[in-house]
Length: 123
Image (cartoon, rainbow, N blue to C red):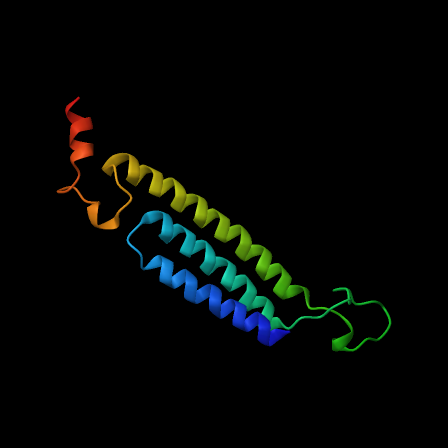
């Protein structure tokens, strides 16, 4: 199971990096989201999958293989929240860039190429 999760994390990373190298802001943002999800799957794969065992230690003596480790679950939850915040910020930033430059092409963004922004300032 861990091998399958590692392969899935690799595919998510590769697809995310490929999309982040594209010229459009929308593809960059989707790639950023795939990288965040790839990190979550990677943390889960590195921690190991424990099925059907709660992350609780009872008062009786138990060995380490009898319960699930809650630390990777907490790390994944934290990574989800941080990834959502970064994704929301990048969406707002892309909206403002599109609004000011009139394009989502990364090569068209800049003060010397923006005709839409200069037309808005004159009016």
